[in-house]
Amino acid sequence: MQYPNLYIHVPFCLRKCNYCAFYSVSADPEKYAGAWLDKISQQLMRDTQKLQNLKTVYFGGGTPSILPLPILKQLFKTIQTHCNFDQFPEISMEANPETVTPELAETVAGFVNRISMGVQSFKPTLREAVGRHTGSPDMVENAVKYWKMAGIDNIGLDLLYALPGETLADFQADLDHAVSLPIRHLSCYSIIPEEGTPFYQTGYEPDDELSADMWELAGDILARHNMPRYEISNYAAPEFRAKHNWNIWHGEPYLGLGPSAASFDGTDRWTEVPSLEKWLTGTPPEVDKIDRATRLREIFLMGLRTVEGWAPGEFEKATGASADFPVLPTLVNQGWLIKKDGAIRPTEKGLNFWNEIGVDLLD
Image (tube, rainbow, N blue to C red):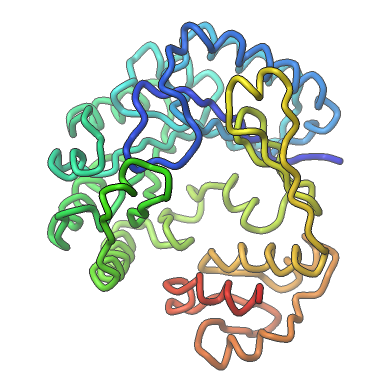
């Protein structure tokens, strides 16, 4: 089995944000990163034969940019030793703007060619409302400058919207600020109070109508700045789309390393234990085994997250199965999907209410 996409989870954060449901630990990376890297290196060595035609590598977190520079250098060297790459691989790394220095940027630019930075909002009171107590617009601008100086052009930012107390004008100001910077990609996510997070305990519930207005506003503004929507929450010109995510949305296998990382071999999905300690000691992953018919519908649904949906023959090539699901005519008649000349894609209404498509498709 070959995995064309590799994900590596870096679980360390300086401080966990109140709204974040991704697995991370507020631990000193100087203390734990060595053991983490040793385990990642062992797994890369184990899976060398499966990683011989990589199209994408993605370092997510947590906060990969807080890894000590010697650890980052060794991580990159280890991947280069054990993996072979496609002619033009996309190698992405998430970063927190407050952690970016010229030295970090130079080190990262020796291997990584795409950066995704979490901003959430440029307005301090909105950041405070969701527990982001550090950082400033100046830090974001400095970080972008450092990446550019190091030679990385493909820079993206993440924004949250429908935050407590946020108005439509506030979100427009965030969008305007973002596009004033030399970035290539923007992700805009509606805040979701995830169960188990401190933010969930506040009882806050986003206003659905305002959230929908903000989603439409993002599409309008970013299209005018050559960053059209290409997925429910992502915006970029075609040449700067996130290839790693695009491949996963369209059913390609991927290997995930690190605590809480998910993998998919085309049939089964499995997730590593969300505990650094248990992962280090070899606790096996949890395997998600479902019948083939359900998995095919799941893969098909994920492709409908994208504006283009499935091109003619694309689903068949990815899965070896037909996309002729019995529910499709109903979804077309309801105005959720468009089926034409072998292509199947969501309407704008279908994108906005993708969860409703999922209910019908997976039921």
